Image (cartoon, rainbow over all chains, first blue to last red; front, side, top):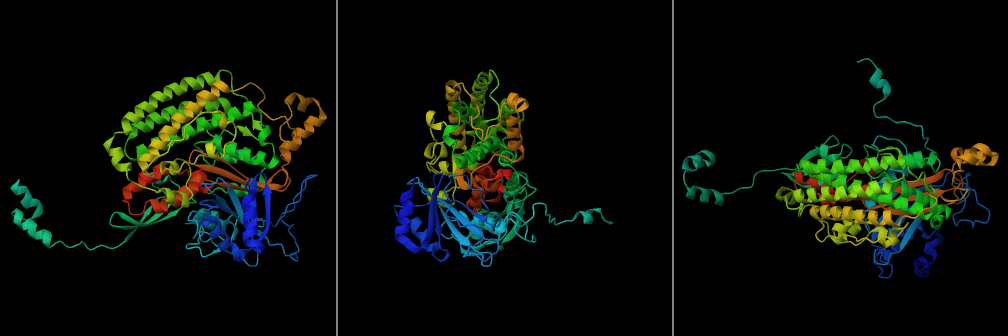
Length: 187
Length: 417
């Protein structure tokens, strides 16, 4: 649909766009982490791009990513996760979805983040609405958004240990602030 | 009168008052922190605001959601694609049908069957979605008016909402948590004569709307409390990611049903109401007009709905008919696999979005080729709008937080996921 956007991005930034893909009518651009702010600023301010509306921020944890490929399905640009850690594939993909109200096109920016270095630039200074969603992503995945003005947990409480949407956080794990034994004990 | 003045002001004559005015000093004041919620009726019991106030005026508001967090996304990763539907009911529990449709569309997008959904199923989806949109707006307007002291409209609208809920109950079997839509269609057809009942109810609701408009539109208290309160400019609205009635009240002409048409919305004629001032009163007007537009759509859809199947004829996502499941081994195994392993969705990722009651409701789904989503993210409009409330309440009185909050229509289940 807006392959033009991807072409323009590649033409303008070259190496900074490590890969692009179009799936089911959604355009995705993988951006190098150090170039993200520059790319995003251009996307917002360039008249032909004019991505004025922020949609969402989230993150994909690729720890268990072993996709079953249907016969005849083209392989994804995303390299497969290497469980040994020897490969260069980073564990997390942070996604920012953008939309242009004027041009009716959409784009998802992705930045690959390794578990050992969870920092990515924050896009909140460019689009205010990302403020809470980046906080949510920090809360759920532990991604550290650099330059965010107020990076705190949003859904969970400050005493919470770990990040629940990571694939290695057990679903059954409970961390109540008030333990059941406290309630049942002698008073 | 003179005595009274003496008593109240401690001054004998007017000249003394003039003298006082020259001597006017500001009262000593300092900023104060006030907790509002979560146990506050206007905070819906799920949101806490730590307010910094200068007198009555809000200087800073730290809004803290999360009291209703039920791990929708984590639970969804462990459920099959079909088992996620009950969870989506509990996101926006005032209009669960729209959530159902949103989730189904995301999975269908991944499976590449968006265009193959039977037309009757699409019409049924649009009908139940629009009924849900009406219930959503009725709740929002009614509850907001009640929070401002107008109890009548709340009762009128809840009466009307209950009519619609009982109609949806006839369709799905549940009053609130419908779980009605399935990947590839809907789970059962509309009951006989249902559309006739719906149309009759719509006529009655038109009357209720006239009643409530008479009570609210020129009500001085209501207008004083909402007009000019919580004003959002067009630019701010876009920068804060607002969609739905909030964006439209500020003049942003964006409606997913028109701008990224899905289902059979292109076949229905409807207008998108747009406001001019972006304040709470415009949000109210936009919501009221949207109710009327939804009713207009429903009348058309009920007239146009074709006969035919309500489920896609695709063995990848449709359950076999019961007669086959009980009589042939292949169908029984297929049934078993669908229920236990879930629908196999090809690996990939997709973002599908619909116009929810409050704005753009989207699901970002990553599939890895198994029967369960690898990741399911919900872009909930309430969460985005609540973030913008931090800005909206600045400079307003504490009492103004109530209409601002009411007109944002923050639904706890959707906001906190």
